[in-house]
Structures are given as C-alpha cells and as structure tokens.
Amino acid sequence: MSSYPQWECRFGKIEFSKLGLTRPPFFKKASKTFYDAIYKEMSEETINYQNLPEYFTKAKTETAANLKSHLKDKRILSWGCGTAYMENVHFPDEDITLVDLSLPAKNLGERQVFKATEITGWRGDVVIGIQMVFHLSNEEVNQFFKNCGQLLVTGGKVIITHTAAKSFYFDFFKTMKNFAKVLIQRRKFYVLWGWRRQNSTYASIAFKNGFRLVDVVTNKVNKEQIMVFTKQDDP
Ligand SMILES: C[S@@+](CC[C@H](N)C(=O)[O-])C[C@H]1O[C@@H](n2cnc3c(N)ncnc32)[C@H](O)[C@@H]1O
Image (cartoon, rainbow, N blue to C red; front, side, top):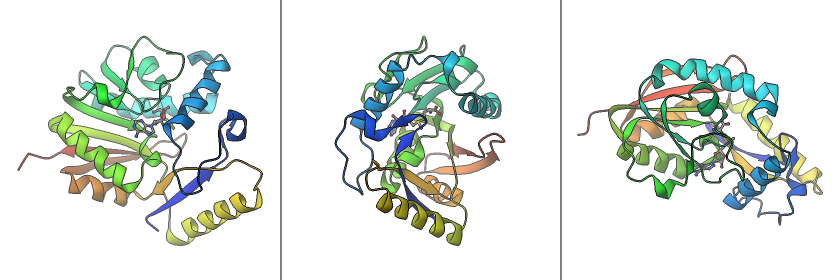
C-alpha cells in the first residue's frame, strides 16, 4: 500500500464530538469548517506559544534545526502554517509569508496569516509544508506541487514533512485496525483526517511536476520524514 487513509476522533486534547459539528460523511475529508472549529476550541483554551504541549514544541524545534540551512536569507512561504509556532519562534527574522486554509481565531505571532487566494502574486525561494500534505488527497498533493512550480524560482525548494507509511502488511493491518475502531466505537466522532504515504509516492508526484528529491531526513523526536525537493530548469 503506497498510501492509506486515517480516521481520527481527536486532535491532541480536543475531541471532535465536542466541537458541536455534524458528523461528516465517512469518506469525506475534514473540511475547513472542521479546522476552524478546532482552532476556535484551541483559542478558547487560552492557547499561546508558552503553553503548547512539550512533545509538540520539541518536535518542531528538531524540524527547525533541520530546516535552518535551507531557510537562511530566503523568501519563504509556509503553506498550512497552523499556529506558526516553528516559523515565529525559531525563524522570527526570516522573510516568511504564512498561509493556511483555516485561521486560528487568535493570531499568536507578529506575522499575518493569509488565505491561499491572497498570495497568488508571491514569488520566492522556498515553500514549506510542515505536517500539512498528509491532509491532502493525491489529487490535491499534485495540485500543491503544481502551484509550487508557479510560485518558486528555478532551483527553488519545496520542503514537506509527513509521517510515512511503512510496508504493505503493516499498513494493511493499521488500516484494518483503524477501520474496526471506527465501526466498533460508533458513538465516537471519527473524521477522515488524512493519508499516510510512502516517501516514494510524494517523490513521484513531485517529479511529475518538475521537482527532484534531493534529501530526506528523519526527525529524531517524532520520526516524521523531512523531504527536500528542488525545482528543475523550466523546459
Ligand atoms: C497538522 S496542522 C500543521 C500545522 C503546522 N504546519 C505545524 O506543523 O504545526 C495542518 C494544517 O494544515 C492546514 N491545511 C489543511 N489543508 C490545507 C490546504 N489545502 N491548504 C492550506 N492549509 C491546509 C490546516 O488548517 C492545519 O492548520
């Protein structure tokens, strides 16, 4: 299995059943409304950069250390920035434009967060998608790389991070287990949260859109894959 779907009933401490939303159809991906409700709930928990969970801040600190050399003095776009913890805490002085599908109700940093439709004129050197691409369907991943091709200069980089799928039997077992949980725990509010994929799946979609994989590193804290692609010369 080069990719498999994942259903979740909570995000950190936030249980989806408590968000006051109608359960979406089983095979329909979590919508913007869903992220909006999660961020609203997080804001109501008086979220700020000091009280984020330690496992989260440690993992982002490790990602930041791996990204540092790629981001120095570049024009950067962070796609799916979420709380923008890594960008605002670790890279306060870099030229970073923030984009997200859903905006946290409270802006936690100095930088403004834009919608994708507001940054079509942006051109630069690096697009980062930290723990974002797993939310996208294969078609949307393809569109993401296509958009990056238009936004980046030749030689520009796309850096994504994701938790990788492992092997056919392991992934098949995980999918069945997840599926069974959803069926057995009917009263819980499960939502199609994203897809686990192998690095090769991302590499092949990127390649079709003119990007070559140049580096893969594993984050030592959360084991996510940090994949670096460069945009090839325009034909
Ligand atoms: C798991 S969070 C990661 C946030 C942040 N990058 C981090 O590492 O903490 C995924 C984020 O991607 C955003 N997202 C999901 N689909 C998106 C899309 N199609 N375009 C832009 N952002 C998207 C969600 O709103 C959410 O803020």
